[in-house]
Length: 167
Image (cartoon, rainbow, N blue to C red; front, top):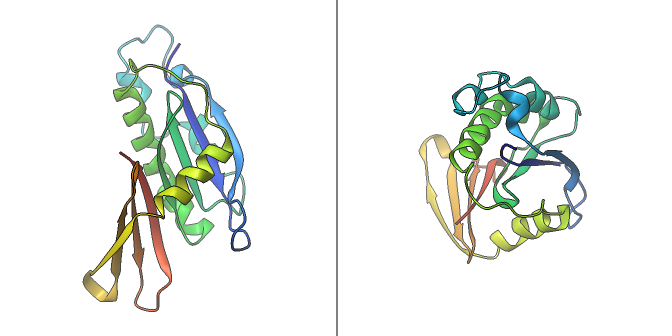
């Protein structure tokens, strides 16, 4: 069987609530490969319908957390569904490519949505540093024990993008 790919949808909820609300588990990326393909090269098409449509169904999805072979890998969160949908095709392609690169790794059970929420929460506990970028943007970075966090904010403090990356 192929790589395990799990995607949780993140929805905007009240402060302090659990934004990881929807679990979509694609047990194998074999669905993306033509019959008989074992090379993995055909598994990363520009438009992967099965996964791409998962991020375009709900109007309130603003991000996702993904795991490869049962291990939490990363998360991307945006301030709006519109921006998320613009980025989603690229995120799907990058996630598939990374999963293919780890196709021979040991597999674990699919993490629960509580584990995904804990991943987001624990990453925020790292020591923060901030630096200015161009056009009034700022980049906050945090290095926690098991992950990195990057947040790009506008001059008014509103975030543009949050990225979580497991070490």
